Image (cartoon, rainbow, N blue to C red; front, side, top):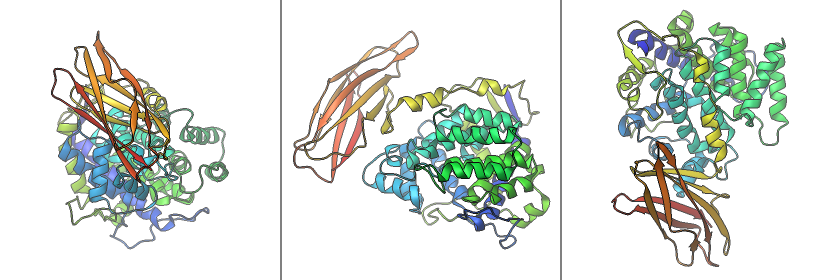
Length: 483
């Protein structure tokens, strides 16, 4: 068993939010500046933390998981909360929301026509998943992925979120920063730019280069990459890691190095601050900086007229702690050890970080099309994958693959009915033979060719309706093709 002493866990979670608020407030005035900065501390008014979407977006994710429950929460539901409660239309936020309003469901909403999918909007909002699943890496990165995919699809921004969430979740148990970084790397594809950038930081650090030399090498990598550039995740996560490595556990030094690397400084400083807070608790937070920032949360991205959100780091900490009775029991991925929160002494029972590593999640992402969606029912889960972006021209064709993964144990034959706009046609098998044999789920996979007529609309809505003989549950997969 893994047991967290309730008081000690609360202290770590509070330090996470406090470190986030401090780092974001110090970094915000330097945000977007591409040169090396000369930050020495706060430049904002005492007692008034600056608003930061890095923190306040997570207040809505807490609301979502409280209202729908962990087992129901997925990218599509988070997408609806985006549309209902999140106000900005900046960069990937705006593209993701525009796609969803056109009927393009997550995670395709974060992939389609989105040149910001490699940007910073997702890894900056991962602390909520780590705090709801302290020490539980697999569940934390699952929700970080569902969150990130809404506005980053299969981009580097999503891999960045998985990497950071893994570090933050494990940091509740393990304090070795280098081991935490290696754990984060084990959760993302080795072919990703995120993996390549972080390993370059480690190579520079091990080679004795200064933080400034390392920063410049990373900056040169990103500015010479035609796919990347400023305000992108691989470089900015690297700047946060540079701060953590070269800061050597000193909170102020870590934040200042991250800030002085430049670029998306409110994000890099805030994440570095939260990681140190999780590892060490409030004892790591300098008393003068804690007094300067206060306890308030100032929001900039939340429609407060539509919902209530916590107004202080203390209140947010209490709300997260209240959710543990649900999140640590309603889990998607079986735990290697049980996780409890009690008044008893903290006991990690010889936990070894090596047992938390593994690339299964990364491999599952690599195997799927960049344009895919997952739909669930009590009988089966369905994955639909497109061979290209869900856009179609008159007379054109698009291929889709549908995989049915059975959940209950008896063998089942599923039927599919396509409902299409006038003139559209779909060819392919009309049934799936899915089996659950000897404890193994054996997916049934069919491929379909959708052909458009010579006259199409700007938005064309098709539906794949999947039924199972002898059962009343129906699974409907919407297929929206933009003309």
